[in-house]
Image 1 (cartoon, helix red, strand yellow):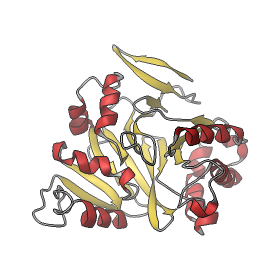
Image 2 (cartoon, helix red, strand yellow):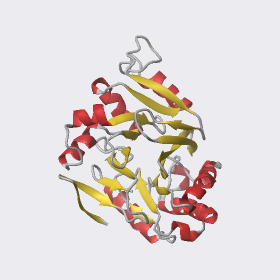
Image 3 (cartoon, helix red, strand yellow):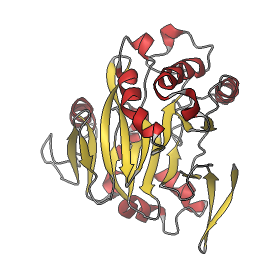
Image 4 (cartoon, helix red, strand yellow):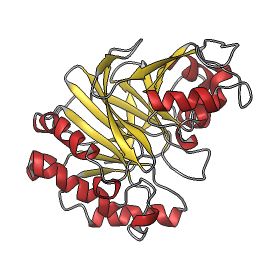
Length: 316
């Protein structure tokens, strides 16, 4: 599954994912894959339609360090500063916790004019807590004056589909339950292909929610028609973590229970070999290793489990 992958004259490292189709639809560059204490490797994924450099960033916990590693791995042939300024066309922030947005804040002085896409509650937190002149300069078009107007906010409405500026992609938004706040799932579309990214989320049973069930209902037709190329979903803790201290996250056991709920809608056969990309694993490394072992052991539906590595491309 893992090998060096040449494209034309540029050599870069890639994770090649088996697919029922021959042509890839999406290129994913993980800039950061973890939750927790490693500030050099926090949730952020550049995603573009295959064959383009028109990327969006799904969450933005780590930006510059991840881009620098990608440049060192020959993923990009231009300097990191140009990748940040030219290739990233907009930011989709699932929720305003720092491990999902700190890279965006820190890199804003060197960035270019772009849009920040998020639910209204998330934008309100960014506006009133981060891009203020007491905590940081206000590089946006709203909030404390003077507003420097580098970034503009785009409020997303659940279930609505919008075109993503300066790309050929669209996105549909779904709310998720993350303990005491609302997180977000983004369903990205390019042509006839889709990719689903979930921000932090707890299981419906613990969250007393129907948000994941509603999401599974929405994507069932896309799975059965083989248009959905993969699901990017968190698994933050190993199974030993008590339910009362999950704080709106998943374990391998809870993830697979949710996948059983999805299977009840799609049929088990539709999920055999389907790409399940595991995000937001929390350090220390012993926990991450245990999460991987448990996921593989509990993978009764035979998903193609993908564990991203920072700055290594995933092609779907």
